[in-house]
Image 1: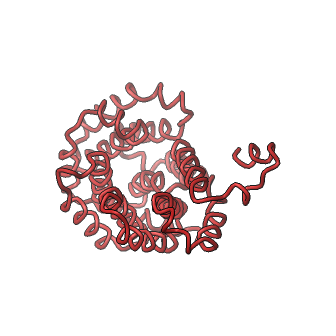
Image 2: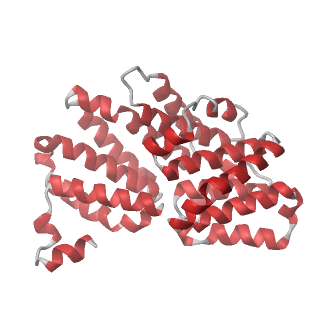
Amino acid sequence: MILNIINSYHISLDELMSFKSLYQILYIANEYAAIQQNYSLVRSFLKKADDFLLNHKEQSMRHHFYYLHILYYLSNFNLRNGLFQKSLLYLEQLDKAIGVGAVIFQTQFHQRYHLLKALNYHYMGHAEKGLSILRTAIGQATSKSSEVELADLQLCLVMFLTQYEDKTALIELRKMTRTDAWYEKKMGMLWTIRKSLLEILIHIQFDHVDLATSKARGFTRKYKKYLMEVKENRVIDFIKLIEKYLFNPDLIKNKSFIIAVDMMVANEENNDIFIIGFLAWLKSRLVRQRPYDVLLSLVNRNK
């Protein structure tokens, strides 16, 4: 879309490129990919942005605000595309750039830097390191810390613990005391939906079947209309499978149920690492493995 617009004015992307314009393009791309829950859509920007930074390295400190955000976006894009080593390289550059900038930038990027770092190590198979980074970042929070970014860190911790089948997942979830309305407003609908789904999975893990069933039905009543409007049918299909499993746990031996799960896992549209996490949990019930182990096998299947 961006290329079509600038081409209509007979402008090349190279002519348009500056630190400010690259930041703006990456911001738009990030919003679009987040809405679609598909970061492969913005993969073409990675090489172009990387080349720009290499060719304008000496000017980076004169455009510090834009430079920091560009590094953050590129680290996030690489993470969501499964390019973890590349993501960590951008994080290393971000850490150095934060250190020589104003204190306000250190405050602004401290939590999101540690979140991306923890996620990278988690998906690379270094579970303990990822968990340690996350707990340290949460422990370093102060009254000046962003509540929004703290919520991101806390939900990530809940996700990690759920995938490890760690019983403290529910304890950490209970620390998220804001209402769903607050989370929807501050964190976004899809973020809140992810939190609600995690809560259902945690209750299933603790064998709170009645509570999990109640929350699954409440989830459908509350979010089905919205999910249909934004064409997120895969979430509706996922919760349907969860409800079927809750009603009859023996379905994990049923051929049609197994095929339905495997088809969802094989769908290229579900290759985002966060989506894979939910599918890995469901797949783990079929293969009787820890969700985290299934997650790693799915993340690494195309490498």
